[in-house]
Length: 92
Image (cartoon, rainbow, N blue to C red):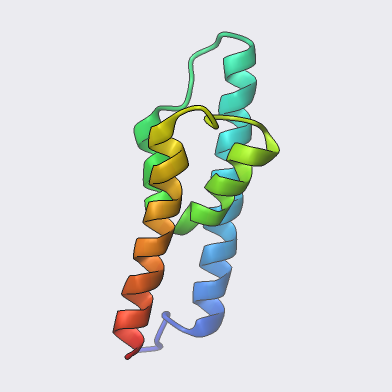
């Protein structure tokens, strides 16, 4: 059986999940402006936890969205740092 966990596939996945997270932040911001039903905070955190941290953080500042919520200001970077530490620990 072919190994699907190649560096190439991991990079493709990370690019995709970060673009999806960035798009989710944009969509949520647009819905907030129009007072429509929003994307849940749980969903946004799940996307970040699944590897979309850079997209989530970029979306916060590009779209000026959730930048006053401590939970997001601390939470998104904390998840990214934790994930980096896990990768380092696995690679050692």
